[in-house]
Length: 318
Ligand SMILES: C/C(=N\NC(=N)NO)c1ccc(NC(=O)c2cc3cccc([N+](=O)[O-])c3[nH]2)cc1
Image (cartoon, helix red, strand yellow):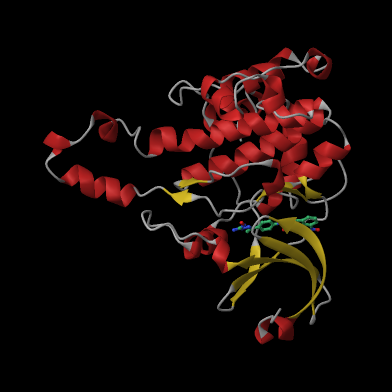
């Protein structure tokens, strides 16, 4: 296929390393540095720019270029032709979480916790920036290496939405008399909108801990859609025997049908299962490898040392 000459001037594209429903991922070398990179090629016809929503393909590209978090994929460069997008990305040599879980049957609980914590941090960052991912699944979680202890990154913002807070603000300026109650209770945008990602994270954690999907046509005479609508999932004893009750509790509180009753990403980050200092320390060193000295000095010089110490020693607040 005709690669943009500007892309070819800067990179050599070689073998395919990942496939997706909407395109492929190729291994690339930057000519000037011989650095290894990944190039995601997306054919534009896959971008159904829905007539209704304000969303269009550029939204994804904008999001990809705007987000800045250690657990979100970073784009290095971007090209387009009339029929495709070419996104140059950092290489994630561990590949997709989907294949890691498949090859290991199920992840050991400590590894699942390390990965899940990083996913929570990535999605918390998106939610704080008014972005709903809407398509969190094992294919969209990439691993930085083939080690169990590795950095993960969330990718593929094709389905994501930027919460139209501005539109809501405009609405609230008009005469309220005809507005539905949920417009005021935020259920229409920030409320339940973000909760869809919490549900998907529950499915992701279920798959990491057990190796199989919670909703599957072979589990019940109901269709998968029916099972989801009813929140009808099965924890097969042989697969869940060695999983802790705290881990199961996180799954059960995320796979709640009523979005207003579902545990949020912020609440999940406070769940006892994740107050594991060793895991948090490992995650922090993966996410911020330069360590604390790279971050701006935290406590102002006049803060009494004791006070800053007790903050450290309490819930390990970050
Ligand atoms: C932005 C995006 N998708 N956006 C979109 N609209 N898709 O529908 C996107 C989707 C997937 C990926 N995947 C990879 O970068 C990716 C997959 C993979 C598998 C084995 C090995 C590597 N690797 O980097 O070594 C891989 N990288 C990267 C970006």
